Length: 558
Image (tube, rainbow, N blue to C red):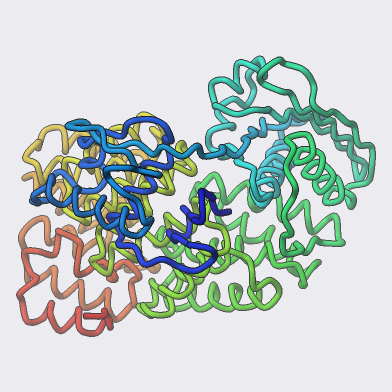
């Protein structure tokens, strides 16, 4: 939804400026200036704040001249005057201020629904219902909804709604409980105003499981009305008619969300059965496709077969719902892993245009931008995904990763420390923090982080590869050779990716062996080879003829 002032409308998510409905050309830095000012109308945004937002710490630029030029171009686009400003006021020697009041969209937080069934095995249903309501309310134009990663940290706690609301800076808190036995459900919902603690709306639903979508629609309409929002027209969402299929879908989504390797296969089986029971419902196709992709990433399945199966599922899902943002993001990720770069770009852009306030498309797109050496975009989309879902494991990891690919090691370390504090069970955050620390010469702490990451990764090949590379770089050659022996041994009896072995040889400085295993990884179509042009580990062999031939086969755009 655009924000209007005067004759202008700004689409902050789509990064567009319109004047009376017509697009106005504006360079990226000028748009960033406008966005920063509009985020804090009436407040001074300092020149130092602009510097940190627009230019990385390792970027060498005449900052004063560059900022003045960006503001000047913005004023030209708005028809504004520095001497008699209608929009942007200059605060001498300090910064700038946006003088037009900007109405703020009301915000609501959906607390994790309480499972009153009395069986912990039914947590998937109460958690799933919470997630579904967050997604449904997020589609209401003019309403901001707190991310699931933020609200789920309150799960199991007895908290006052006003206290939570003030902490999350929202106008209302939606509380609920769910009880289920067989196909009968009871859902109690209560919308509490943060300002005075009064109930804005409350209702209890006693119904059959098949009516859960009607209940969700009623809750969304009631919340919008209570928050004085006119619900904009949204594309109709298809719902399953088979209650069992819905329950299976929720179970699979619950397991996939936990990201535990031992639960991915079971998650896929639930989605597969949901598809069998309800083949014309698009939602399970996304989770089933992601199960294939995740198992490929974990090194559990050969990429050729897994990515092909994932592609079939995504195609079927999009045929059922062409407006499913998560399916377009999944397609973008899939095409990136298949080195089909233009198709990946198109799918990612489509996903973001469909749901610009969804963190998932932004964090997926950041990987593609990084692989294509578009580091400013990569960091920007990763940072945006953190803004939208600040406590999620993957959004925080992607910001660390994007900075690492951009060789902004100081920023990667800073983001990595924050990410570990928020999500301490993320092994790959530890690995990328370790990589960044090693690049900065902090070898002892790097080894500590690498060792912690390895324990959390549980022996997965990708984690072993990061650890093996770091062991070699940091001089722990015995451990590095042990990783190589272990990974080569696995290949004797089952599939195990070749790329982690190549990384470990790179860490040891054994170029010939590293290149041999990289060529094996190419033959196996390892998806992570897409990072070949930006992964700093390859710098030592970047000018080698064999490596250059290898990268040529990745079809990377020049």
